[in-house]
Image 1: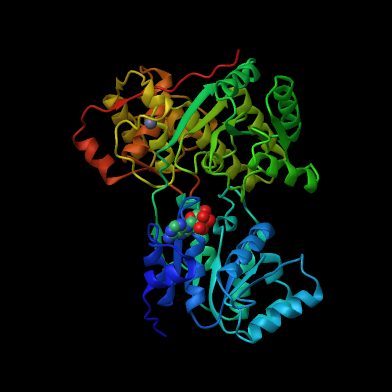
Image 2: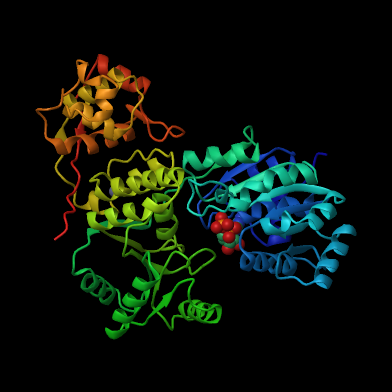
Length: 517
Ligand code: ADP
Ligand code: ZN
């Protein structure tokens, strides 16, 4: 069925907005046309409207799968307030009793309900599947679709059961939405939902108002943080720590220093947690010290700083967490404290886990370490991680751009790297490539008989510290590609091949040193 409606008018009359944000209109048209749709939009971009608006126009009920019960209720309230149709939006989750569920079902059966929010757990319940089979479904919206992927920052196994359940209930177009945009996650989502041919809408993930900085984490880190907060007295901020214990400790230290701070983690009871959230919103508290349990669904527009006391486990998580600063477009200072010791600690935590999980965890961690140690523009690195090309030389809003390091010429070394990768048949990861270039006779290299190749040890005369940053910067520059599916195997791109034929100077910056004291 074709829906010929004036969307701008509908937007105004239903939601009271004058115009669409970003790609919203094109996305909504795509949904109305009955196509599968994949939306990548940063937090605050306006994803919800992309399924809410078409659901109100289309025949049938749209099923919105969403991981957070609190958010569901909130969205249902918003839609309900927009309309005078009782029961136009509902949710089904474990918080409802039998009679509430019966009411929801009655409203759906009578064709009143345009939007039904469900948690994945509820969707898979036999009762609900049976009921939904009898319902006319306009489309399925999968919100926070990155929960499908182990490569994302918030993996939920039950999200992997969504597609089979949809098949059982009855196919309808799918719109998947996420603020997570790495290639790995994107591929995972599309494969898992079987929407490989979905039309994709990707907005820029650049947040120009966020300032990124990485500082060495020394034994004085607490003092550094206190000094920073005092410098920004009265402003709202979030400090992320990895452990509950650290959250408690640091919050106590801040309080002892006359800072209005409170701890927040999943170990606190829910009354305390919601009190803390409220106090933060009304600014009775300036600083929340939290584990990553704090954030999803928090919408305080004027958070002025986000500090990472410990390095995040993935760049994905880092982006989401720092993204909570400056949502109003104003200043947002993102400061990360980094040390090699922390990195090793996190690496060690991984040892007890299943091998596949360890492998993923380590790679994600390596990406974060590379980001922290690099002297390249942070924004450029982050956006590159999300598959986006940032073509300005200098962003003027990160530590590396404000205090640039001297660049060195590494054209000769780049040739060595490219030739080595070709020599070992583009089938190895960065550590192996560096061992090979450095001429280290590791068991693995000997097993592959690579110590007999011409390029083995070709980089012996260069400074050892050059290879890692060089390879990373060659990836950003597009000479080397890091395989997504195959755990980071290094491959040469067509540009890399051209470079080998006609090498030109290649300027790079060495990494910063983060030695522990
Ligand atoms: P996301 O889910 O992408 O984080 P939301 O859907 O919560 O973003 O939208 C973010 C904010 O933008 C909300 O306050 C929403 O009401 C507002 N918004 C969405 N679309 C528009 C629009 N076309 N015009 C003005 N405000 C909008
Ligand atoms: Zn920069």
